[in-house]
Length: 460
Image (cartoon, rainbow, N blue to C red; front, side, top):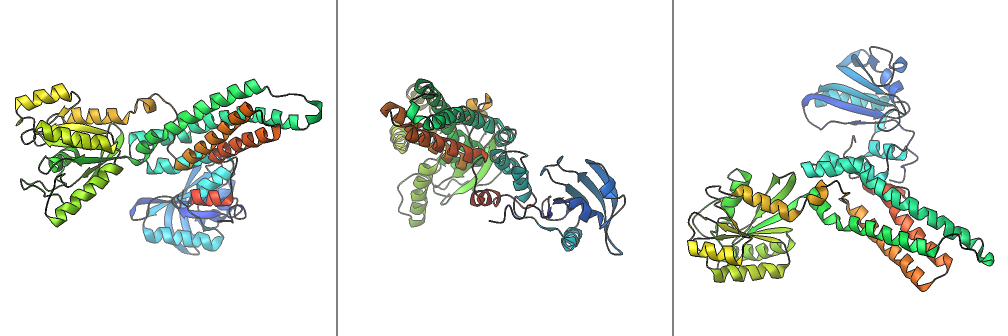
């Protein structure tokens, strides 16, 4: 989208509400001529004589033809989302009406907005930085309390504030190092190398904390892929149904009923978990079932959490030890979940409590202690860091830039250790500043912006 800057003067239009029939639809225009163009088709008050943040009742007409009775909201620059003149036309929710109004406005001189172009203009006009702009899309797609909170924190500048603070401190030293380059013959030092080392080490700690938060951020944003694994007839499908509170999976006494994956989502404590009911873990001569078992192992390796489920009435400690060793070798966090506790023998239960005291005892059929299981699942996700208000990285682009920043800061430390010349030191500092600037948008390219905003919905 190389025309980003050249098209800034256009007035753009798009439907801001979801496609389809509804009670109302909101059509948004932004640009210097947004009010003037709307005024040409609006019959009511003269919109060009009205104040910002006012709403006006009237009709939209194409010549003598009345298209709809509407409410028009005015937001006069710079007091709008895009910092341009913005008009929002609220019509009845008919797709025919929406199309007629949009086509009429295009004939008057507006053009269809590109994906994310309203938010892009807000960024280009200084309404917020690039990280905050990306948070707008995250907020729209947030489907849990945790993802909503993370997006709101980023949109309000929590993450940007940390990055801006890092850049400000580093910029000071960069300018001092650059100044020294102009006075190389005088052999003067404007920037203390000891102070620079202390600063870089402090910045590294902050950057590394942000990098380490990405695993949690990714969970918050995208959900936790959670595999329910165990041998056939352990009650995996029953547990999935109990957690979802619906009959999603087929439950049968016949072992091996589930031969492929059944997936669904559940919100636990404000976090989305994507539960995957898999084929049972066992050796089988059935070709189809064997394929399911093989794919189960693949799913387990890719999971963020595994619920190892076993039937207390049909399992011994030898099997449990074997399966636990298998899971430990996978390196994926897992919970040992003993099912059908109402049917289990007391000797096995006591052994489990002694050898594996972290075992969760449930009865998925009778839906007993499911709350205890959910509590344990949340403990493994470790939301404490998030709930204390710490900044969490949820965006892969930010994560990549932070990793590059870390590498550059380590090069600065290495350069200080080896007493490299100022020009090499300045180069590494500039690289660190560049990668930090990529996050908030001080450093951008048209290709980068096009890639980011093309993922937004049209109308936002």
